[in-house]
Image (cartoon, rainbow, N blue to C red):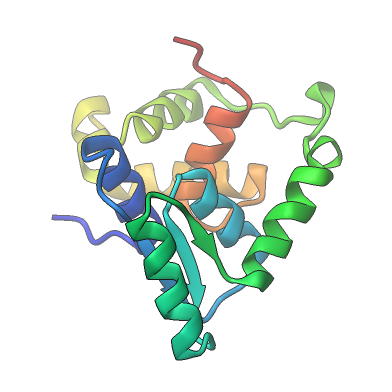
Length: 159
């Protein structure tokens, strides 16, 4: 089984078990991570620097069916939502993908692992990883969750 990060785990949990509550506790208030996790509809994002009362407050909100994000996290989200128009790349500035990159991009979006993609396309795991690296470089993301977000945001594979 492939190892996954918390972002990928949250995405899978929310897809398969929509009613499951997810509370993220992180020392990171990095803008990209905050936005990606909140867009996955997590129920709480609590910074590890939060005090006991804030943690209790978060659990209380969630128990009542609400969501809770620590003030710093909420501020990042609020700024993102207020400035969302400036965060999108114009259509003519988006990178061009080769046909093989598009195949791999689609399979990644479908949740396939590098091994599964390699088997399906009859190419080596290392070739898949090389294509993945090129895709991630072209769209300037560091994690596969950023690739998934990019595909969804720009509706690259409309249903």
